[in-house]
Length: 210
Ligand code: URA
Image (cartoon, helix red, strand yellow):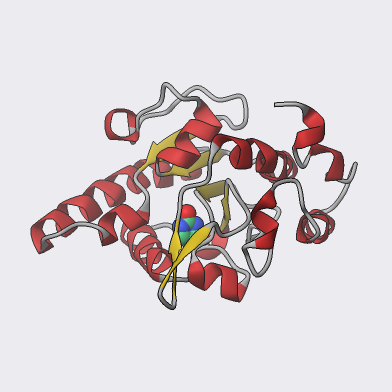
């Protein structure tokens, strides 16, 4: 994708995290800014050793302007707590910073971002990663995993093991918390949650590693 069709020209040079967030608030690098209420930038501190990356904000996130604060966020919080990870010590963000949706009655239904939207938004994520320089980079779900680690990565096959990345010393893909919400039975839900927690325990070990 040509640089001028992405957010790259909007990234301020040598900026702070709040300055980056302010610049992202005015992003119009792809048409999604027209659908969402606001840019939902990452949340967390500059000295986080861990970055968690989701796909894109959902309805709740779009309204509140914060990542992972809706139902998927609650699942993520539970999984992190079970894995012994303090969410407030992590930086949480998304590949795409605007909510993409279609209307169904009064509901706004999530639709997957396409390659053009992902490519346009990636410079924001790269700038966040460059400023924070995390020890561990975690992709939640396949959109984030493929955007960060390449199309060859399959979360079902590659989750929970370190993947090569020049963005961080350790890179891991795991399932998206929404996948747990989509399960049909309690048993499937429990199994899916256990899988996510197991991967996050590996993440916790990598974060603590001296
Ligand atoms: N799903 C995501 O991928 N990110 C959010 O912030 C919320 C739901």
